[in-house]
Amino acid sequence: MAECRLYDCAKVIRSKNSGPFEITLDVLFDDPVIYQKIKDSNMINKTTICYLYRLTEDKITQIVFYDKALGFKITFARKISSGTCYDTDVYGAQQHAPLSELIVTI
Image (tube, rainbow, N blue to C red; front, side, top):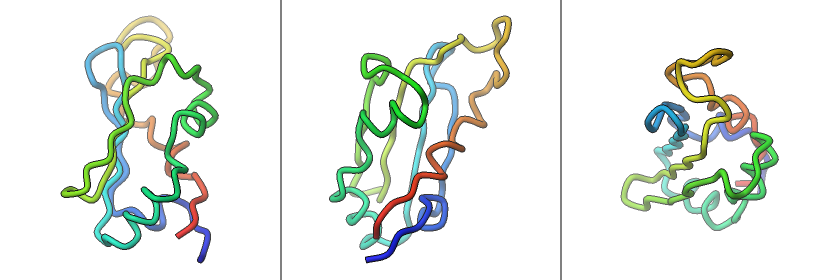
């Protein structure tokens, strides 16, 4: 077993708006063994996401693993709706950074 940052073992990590009030994080892998290890580790859960994004669990809409795509999706409520005053990321395209730095065991 080895530890690495999620961005070192994932093929794609991205974020985007899921409407004006939610952010979606997508993580895709090109290695089915690594994907399965991440999935089986149960490290991708509400507690971890709440810690990384400073959220309460009720703000997380979904955490879904897609085996056929070798990836998972996380959706949570934005703290500030897209395009309103004080929003610093209208498209939600820069919100994947905390997740990408997560240390995982593979």
